[in-house]
Length: 163
Image 1 (cartoon, rainbow, N blue to C red):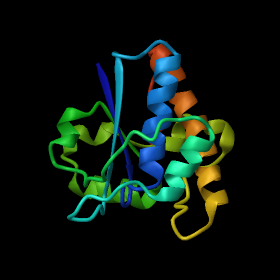
Image 2: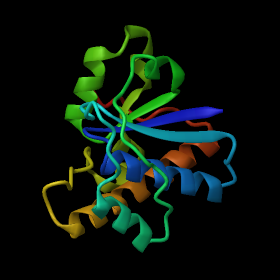
Image 3: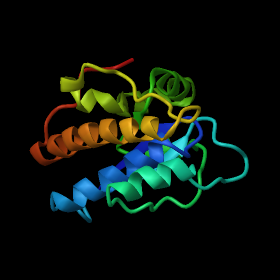
């Protein structure tokens, strides 16, 4: 089974959205049981938090399940356990590189590397904005997850390194 970890800052907005969209699209593509998605944050608090209510609202508005119940921080064993670790922005990727063992650095990429047609590198953090920011993040997650699923189905090479 291919295991993929989606990573943002607090694990309450972007990465839970990416996790749910990835899970949904993988199921639709017939990859259920062959691909699994989880999410974590580089700076998630000591105490787990539920997803932001605006995250839930954006997901439900488009008929995605909410799924993720509590946030969690990236753990050292995540680098061994996951086949791909996809960061939402450059800051998240930099934080991952600081703690990732050298032998697992090839697993680290920006999530939007799977949506080169967007000509964007980062999924913006919608936390300090309104609901429209969450809708935009969901659109970006859909595009990147679709590209990721296509990549997995074709057994293609990883996107260009996004350090």
